[in-house]
Amino acid sequence: MKILRTVSGLAVLVGICALRVAVAAEPVPLKVTASWNIPMTEEGVRAAVAGAKELGFNGYAWSSQRLDEALVSQCRASGMRCFKLLSPLAKRPGARVQVVEEAERRLPGFAGGLTSEYQYGGEPLPGHPEVLNLELMCPLDEGVVPHVASEVARAKRLGYHGVCWDFVGYRNYHSCECETCRAALKAFLRNPSNGSPRAAKAAFYEKALVDLYERLYDVTRKAAPQFTVMTHCHPVFLPNVFHGLKLKVDYSASTVGWFFQPHWSLEKVSDYARRTVRGPYRFQSAIGMPMIGCYSSGAMAQHRKSGKRLRAEFHAVREAGARAVMVCELGDIFSDPEIREAVRAGLAEIR
Image (cartoon, rainbow, N blue to C red; front, top):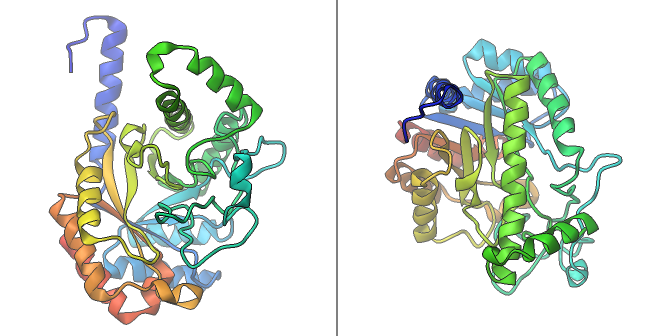
């Protein structure tokens, strides 16, 4: 870092140092889980928090709008950190909905038609194009940041330690074709320094996500200066699956072992773990957080990972030198004794 000589530069330097101190104060390594398949009762929350801690987690991300108070209370009593899982681009009244290309309206996910190969926002299988089976708002929508600011303020009032973003991306995994985006893209393409039309289009849509993350970070820090800000990079951004390296967050979680069959090769898991952990990150204070997904029961039982497989994925994360990890989904981990013990052993290796 260059030495800053102006008063304003000194202020920036002090701010950066303060940010690094705040991140350094986090439990290291931070081991976070999330759940959506647990009983939605206060007893279910108590059991989930106690079980998560017993497995070795020290952070819990919670998405439900119900039982916030119970989750926060249990986490704080157990010495665990709790994070409000928020989707900035979730559909809401009056917001601008993302538009996909005309041909993409016929793909699995747009109006149902899910196939056994469907990846739910992960990297589509070769030869099996898809779109996310969920409407998202345009990242250029002017109401996104104010809406998130109010959600962050609520999370602060409830006693959360931070936020975790999810579903910040494009329904078709590469662009939004609404009139606002197309007009902004047209202006972006007129600058020859942005490269070829194809490269410039990818850069434009990546920049839209990166800029949104920066605004989200800044508004969160303003509303809740002590909050930890993390994200899970989902849905995938196909022009650059490692765009998480550019994001302004404290923890950037990128998938290294996706939920669904066919499970990624262990070579791919190791490669993605190394890239996620080692960066380099645009913001030096950001910490790479490999995300491991696993299902084991119900409609997703066909995607179950064996204990041996999970241990191999955790080994790849440890070998990459991870200082943080995210593992989902907690309800399915609890439901399978073999998976539960593999997760317990894997978390113990991340130290």
